[in-house]
Length: 339
Image 1 (cartoon, rainbow, N blue to C red):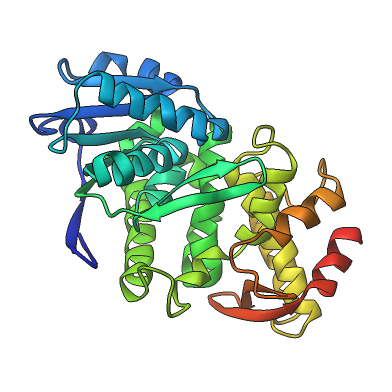
Image 2 (cartoon, rainbow, N blue to C red):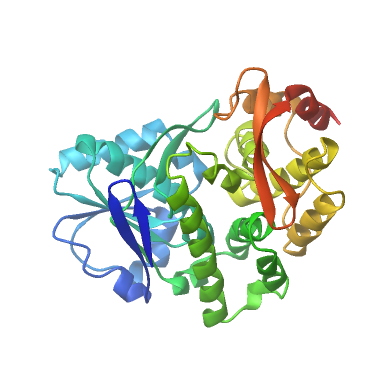
């Protein structure tokens, strides 16, 4: 599968894990995390340079970024280097931002090992770091040279982290393809390799189609992928980027934003209940708990899509259809946060 971008195109290749880790080029510099490095130790190839950062969202920080670029510089990496992002969404964002900025940009290969990264963050070229004030506030667009997806790597995931990725899978169903929701409700937790690969492949196809139409979020088409993310990012920021995983926060966000859509007449009545039921089937959280309303409101006010006194949300019209609504009054959102 090939994905077009402003400077050309890149291949998304589904392959065995051993093949994904082979032939990485003459100067590979791998950024991974400690858990992935331990889980994949028996199959990691010898040679090349490797750095392992701490697992979790807190590694998407300026401090960890500085550690990585200093490592590259100290070890003599030059403009011919290839950065290998081996891990989940955090590693992909961190390594991608390193690749985008080290010596004004070097080659990047994404090898996503989590469901979240395989179906979402490894595709599309967005790379970013977090600040305490908000998620992804420092970022860029840096398309990979290649994405290699080994679905067998998902066997290394703890159940909670697999379910975390299912929030994004279900999101594609909610915004684009209702049939995907039906497929997921057949118990994907126990799906065989072929069935799981088909689901991942379909999610990649859906995202690739959207990002090719609006790579840099100019036309607003790509914004539909942000369904659940305005509230979700606020939940992550308000809880300190630790106790709630990204997909869990997005699950909460999708329900809250579906309720918001119903309140302002964008979303058909009953859709929020359908979204909640599908997410709760996987044990994903669907209610705002553990975050102070004031902290959530502060985070929402820093959202990148904000324009003046109004907020932009990607809202469902019905299951399978979504649109960007750029004039949501802040008062409506505050009412939900305080409700």
